[in-house]
Image 1 (tube, helix red, strand yellow):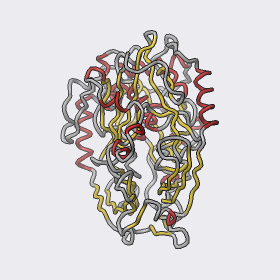
Image 2 (cartoon, helix red, strand yellow):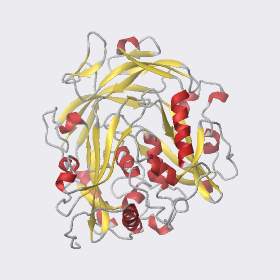
Image 3 (cartoon, rainbow, N blue to C red):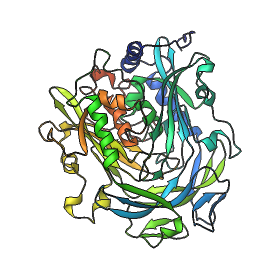
Length: 496
């Protein structure tokens, strides 16, 4: 194993940091772990982790109950999260008014990624983590992924490894590379936010048994494998400073000021009223409850289901909880085209009832097509037809990825990047705008501009040669390995 450097992090200018990230994103090898060693390590983690998730009934769930006054589904501690009701009225989308259950989790969680130099190359510290809602048990998560209830040990379990790296990092001599509050799914969470942090640490921070140091090139390549890099890791990776434009910004057809003004206009002029209400008041408004689920009468959207979990690698060994189970696989797609030779992405100013600021920028298309089957054809999501009829040579990224396995049961979206030169107009409806990858990176320095689905696609865009400036084709690849991950049956997506 190579010797590690012995110097700690030093302050960077933006240009120096961009150059260091570029080295990590194009490094052929891994200084801490080779590509072959990574797959062997991952397979071993899969064998070591034991997790059983069993469907149960609400009455049998330990620690949870329906509040007698509201019918809300709550934990006995009053912490973690609750399932409440929500009434929505809006001028956005095909349905102007509805009621639904929604997850209310007011505390701000921590999503932290530690990075450090090993033999002069920046590496990211990833964790092999099993979540009850994952389709395949283990996925790669950030260094720290914890709610406040977890890291303050409300459950009485063990402490969260590496949390100290992200609590008062400057006092510990760590350098902060990114630190921003970001939202999560606004259709499933009410005003949910997490602190996304990237901290550079020194050689005193070593990888524990369930952790590994990987270069940015290795991580970027793993984003092309189905259900491997989890949602929380993807959102933190998107917050990395953009290293592609160290030689100067690529011009966009709209200035940065014009883009921010457009977002502010959308936030100011969209009408949305989202009011929490007792969960029992949702029943009879299209939703019903049985002993083992809360579901919509059409069988669409999602259900709330109770599960029991037994795990040998979590802070507590067993627990019960509700999970949100989506119905159908979503399509999350970013259209891109070259305008004056510069790649632009088509973003959508979306209204979702759980957003803090009414509107966030989402991908061009973000939907579950089955949810629109009962509506007239003219109320289908705009631009979905361009995605569905895209030819293979237009598709730069096409990977099935899981959403948050700690709250959602087997939630998967097909994430796509589709080039549509000549098929999508430069002039688009006012709720859409063409923006460059650099402009997306600038917006990610601030809270509540890009939604969680768009952040996944920003991370993916940075891995695609020909879209991410300066990224050679050879920068995406793992030591010639392809096909499936050894021992896991997880395929690498054919995205070219």
